[in-house]
Image (cartoon, rainbow, N blue to C red; front, side, top):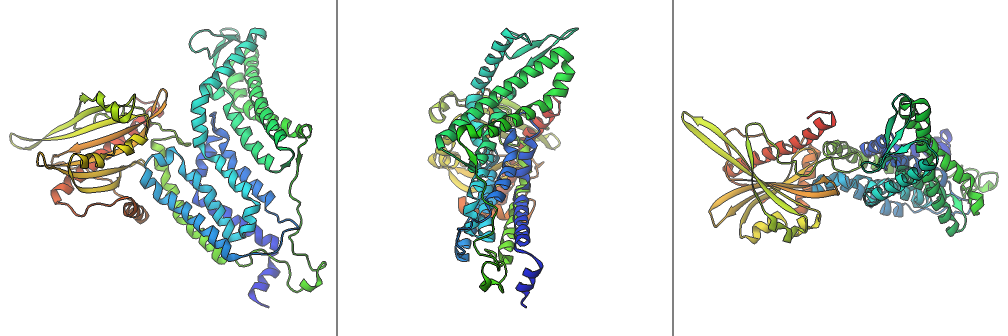
Length: 574
């Protein structure tokens, strides 16, 4: 008997499929371990996007349900097609997570592009390990992974959260005016409610996190997965989904009112510390259960694919196949699994490096940086604001601005001798990110007939990828060095974007250490990005190289200072 035959004798088709599925799931988990961890951490937070952490588990469950082939499926498989479709998907996913952080800097994490590639990697792995037929059967589960991408929710939440919060507060104020569970406070923004409990009572703030958006997003994710398995008229499905969202919001009102009642009866500790942490999850699950039980009222029925054997009959039904034994759609998967595991290694390495983004951004993408905070004092350097240029609005739009600062340091070089080092810091901000592409730094230098001697990308730490530019000004005969980067920052209205530019023609004898890539893959990522996106202009004079390295180190200190400032604030420091 052949080795293949022996393997089939010792391992049933179901066991083989189980092991392959476990290997594919493990490879995906390794390739996206940090991305998935950030989703899971959100489950413990009271935020509008908390339930996005459920998406991978729901998608996996849905894939297991849909993966079984129906009786009517023909036993036709083409491995060439499997690889033609699967390999490009995997290569594209790996290329994006490895190279895109270099090209997009902190925006890679702000936009959570890593989660956009998760369905691509999963689809490619399934195609080459299980075949295109299996991928087609579980296409809904793969597509569901897109619901874990937080950017669309963030955009919608920023646009609608304030109005939604006010609607929730208005409904609560109307209820407590009839049922005296609390007293609405008319000061401030109206979100405070006073709970009367002897001897003093306490206030409860109904902030945006309590408005019910998180529960509605959670219901939307779970309901869409269920609707894949539900049969019935599409209008009734839409009606069921809409009523479910309304019920989820209503149950959130009940949750808050219950907290009011418990607080008035047993006090703040019982209501806030005891009931509040879990009552939201309870009402969320009750809403889902109620809508599942209500499905027959909407002529909807759950139609789980029949757990039947594959299209190939067993030996009892087809004696002519008795010697062949049970048939697997894809019989040899060693090469396919090797490809998936090999692809998971660089993807996992790059994914692990995404931890650095968290120094400047939250788990689900929004920036932690505050506008106007980049110009901060550095040890050994003096700082002052030197100018403001209001005319910049004609280029970068209404509400944009440009401030200029000067760093300088006087260093002793001998008895009675001092050398002055100066670095100019320009901060340009705008609400329209596309204007930074329209009016690029290097294009501006070329417009002014400056000759660019060197231009390259570099790592400034905390996920910030900047550009260094060495240029010659023929009008003055001076050679300047610039380092610049762009990043999103927080403002009261949401988010805006800053371009930070450092310029110098001189530096002191105490040089700063420039950042270096830690490993060979990091250097390879930078080299590939330079090859496709623009490379350096070749070797430059040692003096220019020293000036560039000095300014790169200076930029790294500014980026690190911004990250450290936020971390101190998060820990309750100054």
